[in-house]
Image 1 (tube, helix red, strand yellow):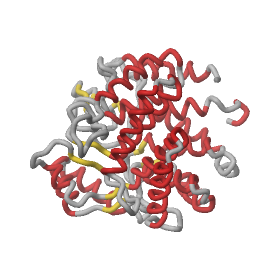
Image 2: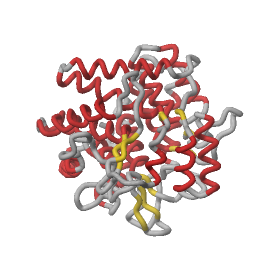
Image 3: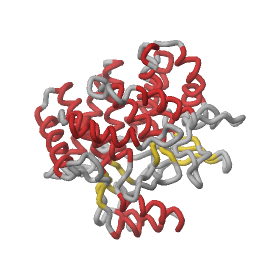
Image 4: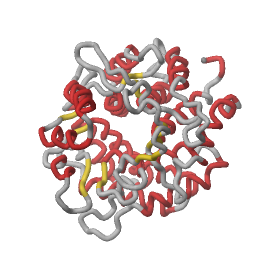
Length: 383
């Protein structure tokens, strides 16, 4: 690996391993607000499963961080539901969380499989199978549609209304890939059948012109939003939900096109994403049908798009390779310099967001690191 990676990003790896964004038990917080000196968890508990699983994936490329990855893996194992028959095997969205989410669970499942691949500890593979089986029982519909989340703790609260008629979010398609990977490990046909069912549903319910399907919203979801955000945030988000242009959803869809060997659709969608990079080399969080976009950029889907381009260079060669350097520089614009060690060298999740532009995001930092790691494996002559 090119030593430039260590020079450029070792401080970010150190932030991920040593700042207080990492809990003592190996779990992670989602965000850090330097103004309020507060940490936030997306899973509505005291840790964030998504961020913890992401940190594991980032650490596994470096031997010196293997111990941290294993400790975080143990934190994930502690979040798998053991007693409830109905929900047994689901993983909570965080410590003390009352929900289990499809997308979060799939990333956790992937990180545990990667831990198994490196350590050969069977407990990680067994845990990933438990999560996958629970997803099949609870979140994969017969037609392949994915349920976004399940409320684990009973009681009447605002998320109850959210779950009356759940929206469908296309980024949950990431879950399909864990079933294919588990089939490779276990040879169990059920995983392959579930994978194919999800892919089939996705391609039946997306635009054949290779853009835009974000999800389906409903009145309970809008009501729930009104309880969680300010009026200004709701106005901005609602325009985004209705417009259905969200790059995280599109990169997930792009992966399914590539998995299904739908090259024409993949190239068309990738071209749309490439042509909609902003002047800073980043994708925006929302795109609207009138060719406008939100002000805030979004680091994670930008990094994921770059990873997809590198993983499929045989398909995305002509007209794409020069954009990797643009994405690289774009990601660096989101890197934070600060005297506060809990934010220094981390990455903003949503640069130029009216409220969150100065906050450190674990998830965005993880994806930036994953992109940089792959980017610097490439021969210097290609960039």
